[in-house]
Length: 351
Image (cartoon, rainbow, N blue to C red; front, side, top):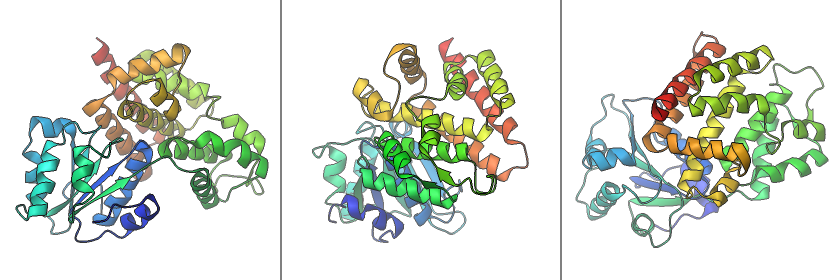
């Protein structure tokens, strides 16, 4: 298998090769890694959220039970459809069972009823995972590096156009450079701008042009004090402060969905920084605060929200987002329950 070039990555993900049984999606842009893994899951199984079709694992699972991966890959589908096993790594750590499985697949010594998708952070060319996946016939490695200015512009233009919005030239010039660094961060900022202007069904007629003043109002480097006042205490474990801030924000017109998006962005930032080494450079690339009390708070949150605990928090946030879209329950209540649950978890860790 020829190593997949960044230019061909999205096309290969959209139309998976049936002969490929294992994918390694890696790189410093963890937002893009996760986005491509999600897109691949959509292409491989009818419903990526079906627990009977998809098995989720972390490096901690592989460490505690090395045989669980081969068992999951060999298991037959209970519903008769395609199956998928997804594994999240922070690097090479815990990759032993993956290496053994792919090596066995290459030699024809293992059966794979499921397809394997592995997400990881930045990996060196000399690392064991890349050295095994890149030349393999039954596996594929896909690298995810920072978006170019043009690709970010394309993403922003497409997402805005879906809501009937367009950018003025000065707004484009001022805003797009602020999105560089991480795909998840960029998408979060684009969604923040869309929420600020209002969805297509919510806006007044004629209010469909994003001007410089609009992007300055929601600029990432200016921060959003109301959202920070909620997310910070939640991830610190300050239940009373978090609850009061959430109630005040809703009373001031904030959107529960906007709060949920802010929480997801912060969780993605914590994961991106940890995967990139956790130093000041990693924080800068993710858009996290680097100086003063906010930086100290972020570093404290990194100590609480990491590994399996961070993965669990991301899953809870995803479940809440799905419930908001599908449930008849009000979004304010669903998001509020999530915030309190995470705050309680953080409080227990700090005790």
